[in-house]
Amino acid sequence: MKKTIIAAIAVLFSAITVANAQDNILDEFDKSAQEEITPIKPYFITVYGGPTASGNENVGAFFEEGKALDLIDWLQGGISAGYYFSNRYGARISLEYSNNQSALNHDETFAPGLFEYTFRSGAVFADWIINGGNVTKPKKFNWRPYFGIGAAYTFDFANIYNDEAHMSHHPWQGYTTNNLCFAMRYGLILEYNFSETFGIYVDGTHEWFTDNYNGMLPRDAAGKHVGFPFDMKVNANFGFAIHF
Image 1 (spheres, rainbow, N blue to C red):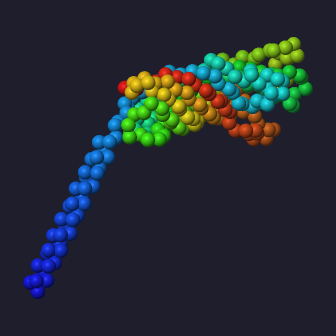
Image 2 (image 1 turned 45 degrees about the vertical axis):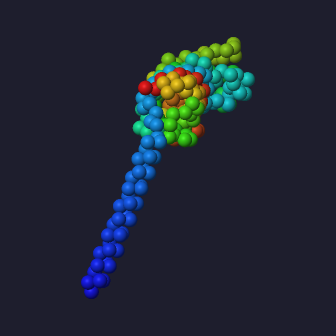
Image 3 (image 1 turned 180 degrees about the vertical axis):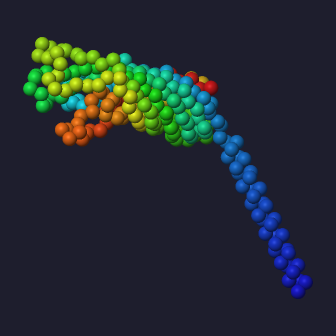
């Protein structure tokens, strides 16, 4: 009996010793892994700008009238500030401004011509950013997909008359001004860092807005919304980033 108890105690102590040894090995491995990760600078600010293309109701009318380039405006840009919670994940707040193009109904209107108008917009977005690739240490080239939600405000609506065929006003359709709407977007940042502090980047973004963004919310005779429920905008931004 004593031999059995002694043998059991010996086995128990052996198991404890092995477990402690394994824990020590795992602790050393974790410490080593942590030591191998060089943290990036967590804060950043950016300034950016570039062309934007509108995609709202009656966007096809611009192509039918041979004026697709009118959908592009070069006066678009913004600023952002953000924080990386780790080398992999970060977030930012962006403020942006843009000019936009749209048109009133074209195919169901007896009057000829493109009933084109412009408007301005300001938007704020909160984005969640994911750093792609190896993030154990800072690197020169970074690719960062992101997605976000926000709100936009549209204002300063103005008609454009490109030729004599335009009427002063559309015969039956109009738009609202000073519109507040919900927004969401997704995009990809490609950034090249000259150092851990300074970088340049391109940022391609596809933005979605609730349908009153361009001042039109089409409804049928029964008051039911008709058509695509969102307005859209595509941005190609070029920017400078400072990390600290």
